[in-house]
Length: 358
Image 1 (cartoon, helix red, strand yellow):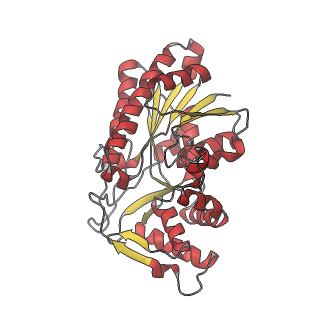
Image 2 (cartoon, rainbow, N blue to C red; image 1 turned 45 degrees about the vertical axis):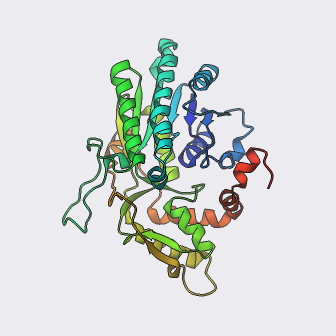
Image 3 (cartoon, rainbow, N blue to C red; image 1 turned 135 degrees about the vertical axis):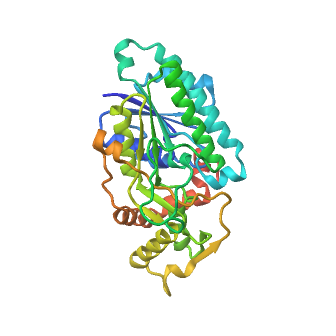
């Protein structure tokens, strides 16, 4: 049994990791999260008083506090998920992304290195610093509209070519982590994932935004032609892969994690509308009637697609959900958890944790 420190554990993927660890393993968890707008402890409500779970409200850029947490809790594994992650926000305000994703990762690496040096040989042998990143660091791939025949996939050897301030900050953090392994001997593993979706997703990303807008009768905004392709990965499949890499991955290795589900954005929106037409029909017409096109995002990557054969062959992981089964579970979860959605949308989840009324 290990003690796992999860940074960003109140976020979408981080909370999925913690739920998986608490339900499917005997490991202990320390959740370190600053609780920015996307951090929601309601996603972890059932474990609040569990003796295997501890929460620390700490900014990863706060060096003394990160040091204290490591010394106090003595984790065996660090899973680093804390990050600013929304591309549109990074275009509007890149500074927060540089601060959290680059400076915060540097602080965490330095404190992890100092902490690692205090361990005895037995504990050092099992320690891992697991850095969780994105496929967006690779830039984009040829699109079927531009190239015929078999199209390439992102592999662990694909050269980095980030397009947005977000992906550039994540690429930089990836390089920092690998350099701390090469230069200082910190035992690290790195994972790069495709687009995640599933329960508890903050409604600024494509799938939850479309679901909630549809239910409220609002427009469903699609960038440009909607022909941008993403490889969709159900978040619970991703969480299972991350814990596997964190505990069994080979030191110094990188693992790409994808769902093998390439879909155009407009196809995703049409599928969502069809599911909602089935599960929560409108009084008149189809949810597809709400689809509207908007001006495309600057520097928008056209295609992402992951080759996940390495993690499948070396660690035995493969996704359990198809896109169809995962999306149906996701839509049903949002339909069944309208109160959670309302509290996120109106901000009451933040006000209540701060003790603010109204």
